[in-house]
Image 1 (cartoon, helix red, strand yellow):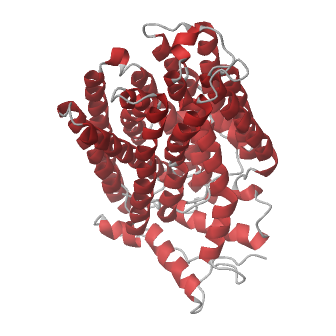
Image 2: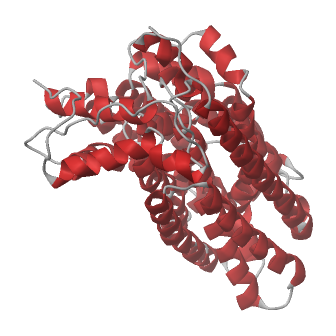
Image 3: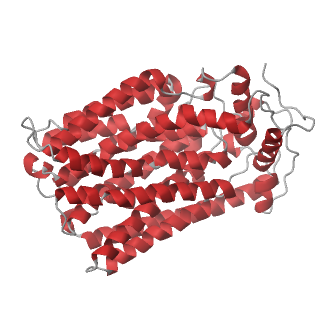
Length: 505
């Protein structure tokens, strides 16, 4: 039988650790940093089962959850952006693409991505992450293989649309799943490690493309077709394995003991309030979430940074190739910026969790990216400096993005608000992906750089407004109290709007 929350006698160190963490999330630490005095005493701390410790249990969660979402996102991002590698190996010529047709093929991917993310998260909650996300993985892997068999413009348009349809639920679904396992102060490292799969995919994709591209004309297929066929087949196999192994929500985890499951639910409740995992998400929930101005700010934060992020992912091989490298060297030179971005993102995430702060760790990487674009706009005849600028752009953007998503997601309380809010942020943000596909039309790199800088400044401004907003909300909540007799279910309906819930800056 799991231990129930109670005031314990002096106990072992791991219980003291839990007390400190709980005091922070119920308002003592975070409220004082904002100049707020809580109006109600904190509830008693939760007690870890005696056979384990909080750290060992968190590690157990990490091992059963993080590798799966990392592999899933790595394969999804690889299948999404490998069209940029395929372009360097003659895709446009073989399919007879001209003008802006390649850009249109990139754009159509985002149409279902934008429209179906909220419905996807609702289905994920209803069906379970294991079935839904594994099925999506098999689907987008198969469609990637079909891209390797298309013969014309219509074929590539159709497959790119279907790829977006199958992929649309994966990204917000994984963030939603991660957010329902970790407390806010320990979530950023996991979010960034998951998100940095994009960096691993970018680095690995360049190396893999350089090898697969060398299979040009093997068995009658061009090198770009082998990129799609082999990478897609690997994704299908992984998705089939995930059907039997992919993790779900806390309530579904069979690898946890009953007392461990109760403890994890209790510590999440202490941090974020009751999650209301037992009830379905309704259209009324969607309407309530979308009426919150902070949710719109979260969308604009991500929207602004998506434009330069996807511009880099889709067009960096073209930019690198313009420096005079051949096809293989272009793929190899695309690897280092992604590798540096991965390391920097993890450093930023670790520091952010350690200081229990998000805002400054979002703005700092954005400033690094802006400096990279500034160099490219002003330096045109110094190859090492231009290449270093690409590194700055990549490391800045792909470090700021996971901070933004984690910051916003973990400031949403309850299953229904987090499911809808996380899907909205990713769905609305991916409108920026459409803009990104037309940012570098006709080799006009300067125009593309200016577009990217403009949107990344929009992202920074949205972050500032969001930070000011949640500080104001925390001050307002400090003077609010819940009505007497309010049930746990009624509190759960409020989510992060509950006066007891303090937003993390």
